[in-house]
Length: 63
Image 1 (cartoon, rainbow, N blue to C red):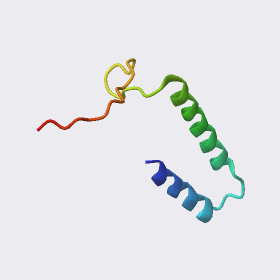
Image 2 (image 1 turned 180 degrees about the vertical axis):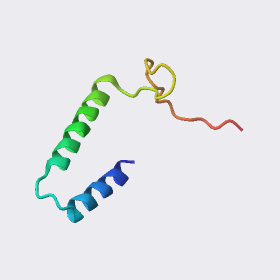
Image 3 (image 1 turned 180 degrees about the horizontal axis):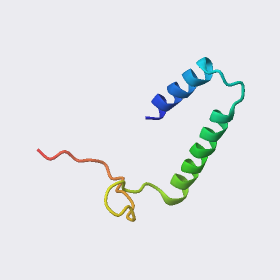
């Protein structure tokens, strides 16, 4: 997902009419806030209440 967003941002920057870097600055600020939140709180579930931390255990395939 991150690679797709980066590719779109690069195309927008290269082909856009704007001469300022406002999109890049805003996107970087959002990314830094998101990374900071992940570092502080750890992984969380997307579904459900979202209050509990996600399990990071290795998946064991049952045969």
